[in-house]
Image 1 (cartoon, one colour):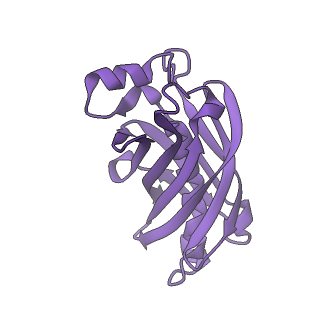
Image 2 (cartoon, rainbow, N blue to C red):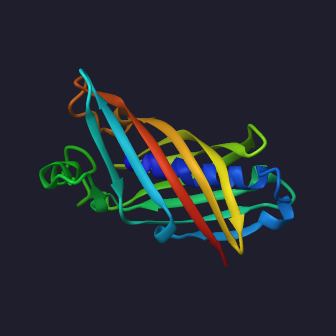
Length: 191
């Protein structure tokens, strides 16, 4: 679930950058490495009757390439390490890492690879890509909003929703929602 979100965020970041109205595409064009120090990948799953589960991934890596001549050819690649999931509750974290959810021992990576980027607003884009988690791959979409560009650093706010059942992570439904909400901040450094 979280991997999906992370993957979408990366793609969304790529799309949003070229769309920023105050920044020329030529200024934003280039290759960026996602910096975990300035980034976060957060997720939440609702629960019937209120409450739910919220957490984040502490370990991930990725790259963003913004194409100066054709935004649609821009690329986002993100890898999330599900072993790094954290909710602030040790027992819940261990359960999420187990074969009931992420199966981190046998599936140490969740990957997102963009397949298209499309502007949907002055500073926003829709990033579509292939999310792979637990050996299953599906097309997912994320919305990326350009949050800033300064001194070789770009920042995006990325959101999206992923159905966890598609990836064999539907334990606890219908008490816990099948929908995972992702809220990510992705900071890339040129280079």
